[in-house]
Amino acid sequence: MNHLNPHSHPKPSRAQIRAEVAALWQLAWPILIGQLATVGMSVADVAMAGNASAQDLAGVSLGGSIWSMVIITLMGVMMSVSPTVAHHVGAEELHLVPHVVRQALWKALGLGVLAMGVANLAGLVFELLTLDPPVRALAKNFVHITSLALPAFACYRVLYGYSTSLNQTKPLMMFALGALGLNVLLNWLLIYGHWGLPQLGGLGCAWSTMLCVWFNLGGLLWWMRRSPVYRSTWPFTHWEAPHWPEIRSLLKLGLPIGVTYFAESSAFSLIALLVAKFGTTQVAAHQIALNFSSLMFMLPLSLGIALLTRVGQSLGAGDAYEARFRSWVGVATALALACASAAFMALCKAQIAGAYTSDVTVAALAAQLLIFAALFQLSDATQVATSCAIRGYKVTRAPMVIHLTAFWGFALPLGCVLGLAPQWLPWRPDQAMGASGFWIALIVGLTIAAVALTALLRRVAKERLPRIDG
Image (cartoon, rainbow, N blue to C red; front, side, top):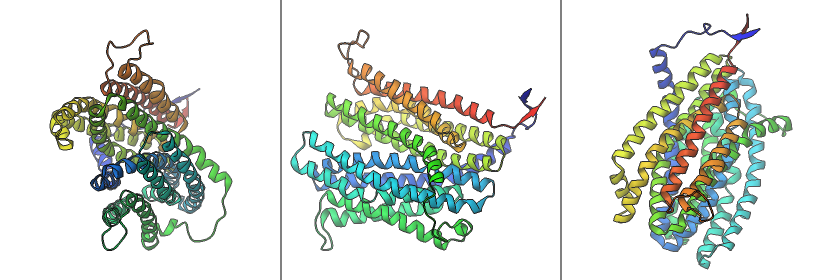
């Protein structure tokens, strides 16, 4: 009979836990700054287009919603390179890394071209909406122009995962900050027509976004070519044709992550549309709470990306106990930081809302929603940390099912019941709760995901521990 040996690995000391938290943070903080810089590009686009005109702001926001959904999905599919390379690094099989990266780049090129087609088809939805013709034209052209960056974005995410798995996150931060600065400069030149360039209005944001993505890809390739850190795993030493078994393996690992990311982002987008029926005040308050909580989410997300690398390297080295230890330290760290951010949001809700708007009614409702957003942080941080740790084990289908069930099986239906209170339902609130109902439903959905993913991580980590006969 086989059974686990509970005494084969000593309980970690406080010093070991502190050392792991420090190592995780060392990897995560440049990712965090890079993520914030990327968010900053979207903020700059909205702010600078809004200063041009209300039509420019509307067109950029609509076009940007398609762009965001496509790149988030692509980001998830490309994430398969991270655990694969991390396992090879942990196993000291560096000679296998270049092949994985080359095949991942073939996958990225194919999916990037496919994403171009999907994005442009999705842009046809603007024909179905009641929009002013200039706004519709701008939104469609925004999608057309930014779609030219999708192959470059997919390839960049491969190099991003490759670099992270080698513990090299500072270059990613450096180029994200560079892209933010370039984005603001190009927006200033192209939106307003400075230095003799044409005044393109909101369309300038599209050209700026497209050029910044290519800048990121070119800059990172240039850095990697010059840095000795990448020399032993440099993937461009020779030509290699597509190897379909390797590409299929990467797709098998990455597609469930892409579906997970799409399910989450599309659920949030749909909720924003459903809240719109309650008028401008509810929409504005919802967007304030969502924007600030998304900003706070960058912290556990960055920890999760670093955690995926740490867990993958331990498993590659054949140390399942170390992988389990790193997983739970990472989850606990994310939850502790979420407690701090939740307390900050709850205590400073009025000040946060006031920083976004001078409208007293909107600020009051936003402050109320920020209480829900504070609670939201705890389950959100737990689910992102556990799901990233599980991906470090190269398990992606079960988390996909959990996320789909949590968002589309619980959060959205419950949100419709609480937020809309449809008359045909036998059980419903006496009055539609609007945005508050959707936020309560999101907390329920994310809590279900957090609990289920925690149980899954516990099971997966336990199954990987060595067994002995006895």
